[in-house]
Every structure is written in C-alpha cells, then in structure tokens.
Length: 554
Ligand SMILES: Cc1cc2nc3c(=O)[nH]c(=O)nc-3n(C[C@H](O)[C@H](O)[C@H](O)COP(=O)(O)OP(=O)(O)OC[C@H]3O[C@@H](n4cnc5c(N)ncnc54)[C@H](O)[C@@H]3O)c2cc1C
Image (cartoon, rainbow, N blue to C red):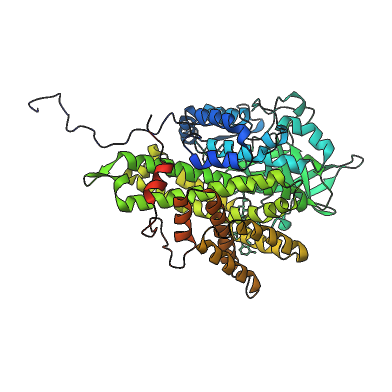
C-alpha cells in the first residue's frame, strides 16, 4: 500500500480535453452565420440560434443512444400475426420529433418567405451535426413534396400531413394521422443506378382511375416505418411513379412485407430494409411511363441534402478537431500551437468552409429557380457537381478530423467513429460518384440547353474574376476541358472535380476571409498541391483560419 492516498491510486488524470458539450452549434459556426445572411436567409438568424442551442444539447446524447440501440425488425406479433413493424429506441423518436418540430422536413413548402431553402439549409446543417441517421427520413419527407405535386389529388391528401410539425410515429390510416413521413423505393436487386431495370409490376385496377396493384421487391428501402412511399414500378406504359401508403384509407395494412433489415456500415440508428410488395395498393403520381422524370424532383432535393449533410459532418469534424487541439498538449506545447498540426486543422477548416459555402449557394439557387433562369441552370448543374465532390470529400475529411484526436478519436465515446462510418453514405445514395459525374455530362450534352447550363455555371465562377489570379487561371483552363470532347466519359470525374473546385474557389474568393480564400486557391487550385490534408504551403495564415473555426470556451 502506498504511503499516502487511498489504495489503487496510480495517477492523476491530466491533459485530457473537456467534453464539447452544451454548445450552440450555430453560434459556433461563423461561415454558416455569414452565409445565411448573404444568401437571403437572414430573417431566420434567431431561429437558427434556437436550433443551434437545442441540437447542441440533448440530441448529442440521443445520437449515441439511438446508435447503441439500433432498430429491431418485428415481423410478427406475439400471436403470430404478421405486423411488419420496426421498433426504435426512444432516443430515435426524440430526434425525429425535434427535427419535425424544427421544420427540417418542410420549411420551404410552408414558410412563404423568400430564402426558405437557404434558411432550412442553415437549420439542417446545424442539426445534422448531432447525428446523421434521423436525417434520412427527414430528407425523404422534404424531398417527396415537389414530386407528389405532379399529382394534385394525391398531394392534396398527403402534403398537409408531410409538412405538419407534430411527430406522429404510429402507423394508422392517413385520416387519423397528425403528420406523416415519406420514403422512397426505387433500388432493386438487379440495379439501383439503372432504375429502368426495375421489375416491380404495376397493374391498373379496373374501373379505378389512377389506382394500381404493385407486385415485386425492393432491395434498399430506408426508413420503412414511413407512412408513405414513392415507388417506381413498370406500368403498361413503362416505368411509372406511385404513391404507396403503409396503411390503407380503411385502416388495414397494405401488402407491404418487410423481409429483413440491412446490417449497414454506419447510419445504424436508422433502419434500411428489403421489402416485398404483394399486390400492394398504390396511386399513380405524374403521367404513366414518366416515372423517372416524376421522381427526379425527389431525387434532386435528396441530392441537395446529401451536400448539406456532408457539410454538417465536416463542420462537426472540424469543431471536434480544433477543440481537441486547443486543449491538448504534446511535447510541451498545445497541439493547436504546433505548426504541422495547425496546417492539418486549417486544411480541414478550409474544406468544411468550402462545403458550407457551396451548400448555401446551392440552396439559394433552389429558392430562386422558379423565377430566375440563371438560378434554374445553376441548380441543375451545381447539384450534380456538388453532390459528387462534397460527398466524395466527406470520408477522408472525417478520417483526418478523427486522427487529430489521436487514439481517443478511434474510440466510440468520442463520436468520431460514428461520423466516419456515416460519411460514405451520402456519396453512394441517390447517385453514386460515377453516376453523378455522368449526370453532369448528361446535363451538358443537351444541345442549346446544355450550353445554357454550362454558361450559367461558368458565369457563377466568373463572378469572382479578378479576385485571385490563381482562380482566374484555373477558370480559364476549366473551359479547355469542355473544348476537348475526346474521351469525355473517361475523364468525367476529373472534369467534375475541376468544376467543383472552381465553384468553391469563386465562392470563397468573393465571400470568405482573405486567409481562407488564399489557402483554398494555394492548395486546391495550384498545380503542385499536396494530396493529403495538412499540406497547405508556407505563407498561408493557418492561425487565422483555425481561430475562425475553433469553438470558444464558455
Ligand atoms: C444506407 C443506404 C440507404 C439507401 N436507401 C435507399 C432507399 O431508401 N431507397 C432506394 O431506392 N435506394 C436506397 N439506397 C440504394 C442506393 O440509392 C443505391 O445503392 C445506389 O443508387 C447505387 O445502386 P446499386 O447499389 O444498385 O449499385 P450499381 O447501380 O450496381 O452501381 C455500382 C457502382 O457502379 C457505378 N456505376 C453505375 N453505372 C455506371 C456507369 N454507367 N458508368 C460507370 N460507373 C457506373 C456506380 O457509381 C457504383 O459505384 C440506399 C443505399 C444506402 C447505402
């Protein structure tokens, strides 16, 4: 027994970092605050502060609980009746209820304000830092609304429920619901990117206009406890879009059977399932045979959210990495004061700021698209470019942020492994990397329409002309990519990557502090740029960049 102190005391705990808790996730995020005002959502500032305070408190714990207690498939009740339900932990319901209360699923469809997409993006980018899983049904419900509007009678029934703000998780007849959530079922075993290969059959019900029976399977159907699904199936006229409720108007269960839940890499708080439809009742949405153009409205808004969600994850990675380095010492000095760590942190900050700027600019294009042609073209192209690039950068960013925490970052309690596992999802879902790159080429290949969207995109880049000579040179060389039509498909990723960098560079040169814009141009637009984070060249003001992004104590 030691001479002094109680038994088994070997050391004092020292040099561990205080927990990053009870933060206002919006107040901590200077680039987001600036972008909200700049892009036309300034009216939502106080609201964003409320959301930032709320999601920086209990939801962080709920995120851990919901992932430690993942959803369970309940195929049968105790008496052997088929029920096809999924049981979620209370923390999941708390997350969903707060998301719905904060209108993350609905704001642009109900607010009546200009800049409502921008406002929602700021709220979503703030909330999704706490946890990623709840974002899936939140996004799908949000994105379903514009697609459903292709069928006004169906939209009239469902839109008020899908945009309501009182969370109602009980599966029951639409007439008895206070609110509803919507999912999507497109992917089948034989193909997800190529939905034209869908084999699910839609048989028109005789004498019932627009009503069909759907039979087939779906291989990836997330959030199966949603009340409604937009489903693609082969009608006599070809692939068509349908609205399929889980519970029929008379209160009986639709013929929607859950086969199993997916054992996923991440996103474990959320359920993703394989389902079968056994003559399930559904209503046509849009024209028969026009399933892809109808559901593309949903797909487009989902892709927007993939950009926002990844920007949120990057911000959370930066918050944790800069916080840790500000409070941890090694070799006699704070990590944040050591030149090489500053370089890594600053590089991560620049990436997160570029993603945020792009997400917020993209959201403004969604706000303005209805009455502005430039915005419409920009929305078309920048959604695909941004989804490709920002989501591709996510996993590497999360890994590097995790490494800033050293061994603690590799441990679940830090939350960083969960962030890291979540990140690839946004890149795969709703158009994997290659599919997004090819989508950019598709948009560009449409004759005069293609020239117009490219023109709008390049105009947006050129809005920063004269602001930085490296950006000017980069924008000029980007034009050469399109002049050279040789092997364009083979080069598609390279071309889209360069478009994304030019757009992000333009946004940062125009709007970010000089240190951030300079770091971006020096590292992302230069010929001899390093390949890893932490390779910003000398001369970049890494101290100013890190200071801008570090959560302040208190
Ligand atoms: C967590 C999660 C949740 C999901 N939730 C849903 C959901 O709710 N509803 C739903 O319908 N789907 C859902 N999906 C499915 C997802 O949208 C598909 O997995 C995705 O679209 C890819 O389809 P696939 O898996 O069939 O891959 P494939 O289409 O077989 O693609 C495989 C690879 O080939 C590439 N590729 C495809 N075509 C080309 C080409 N022409 N040239 C070059 N490369 C190409 C792709 O980029 C990809 O990398 C979910 C997926 C995940 C991971």
